[in-house]
Amino acid sequence: MTIFGWRIPLAASLAVWFLAWEAVGQAKLSMIVPPVSAVVVAGMELMPTQKFLSAAWITLTAFGTGLGLAIVVGIALGVLMARVPRVGDILGLWVNIFVSAPISALVPMLMAIVGIGQATVVVTVFLFAVFVIILDTEVGVRQASPSLLEMARSFGASRRQLYAKVLILAALPEILAGVRLGVIRGVKGVVIGQLLISIIGIGEMFELYSRNFLMEEFWALVILVFLFAFAVSESVAWLERRIEYYAGAR
Image 1: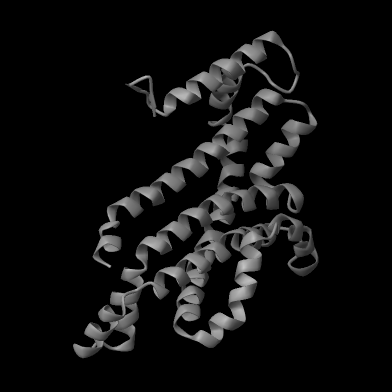
Image 2 (image 1 turned 30 degrees about the vertical axis):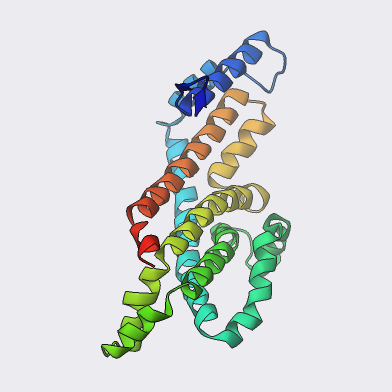
């Protein structure tokens, strides 16, 4: 970011927002907006506690399981839709609908199907993440150069080698873009699932702090969730940058 010829790091904008937040909190304009300094102190006190560590483990387990299933199923279905036109015609409309649909509106219905518990949260994360991974994988495989496939066939590549060593690698930039978006949507899914259906893990702590107006702890938890989502998303983005030469090679 450049202002009046000076290059300013993007982190500086966070400093401005935190200063404004601190000013509002110190002025006591609203009971739900405590000073950011108090939020930071509450967060540092919260993280080492056994309650937070147990809740984080429950949440991370649900998130990791749901996202892992979404990646496996999403990539498989995306490749299948791109390579088999009939499957693409059948599933394409539904994938596009669910990518743009408010999945959170369907979450309460999962209680009747899956029940109330950790399994419901896993399914919620899966539904939030899988469709965007399918869509991006399909786009990436469709854009794979036909000359690469012809070359692989001319050298006697088997079907497994064609998919593993040509199509998946050619589509890797789009696949990773879908995974990055799936990670962000998956974080939303795990929090929504634990708030609306199974009041466990981080969702239980959100419910506890908001119900008792413990705003310092509440906002500290919000910031920790945001930091987690940002860290995981940036990790996938870093991996994207490491393999972006694939896009140029295509």
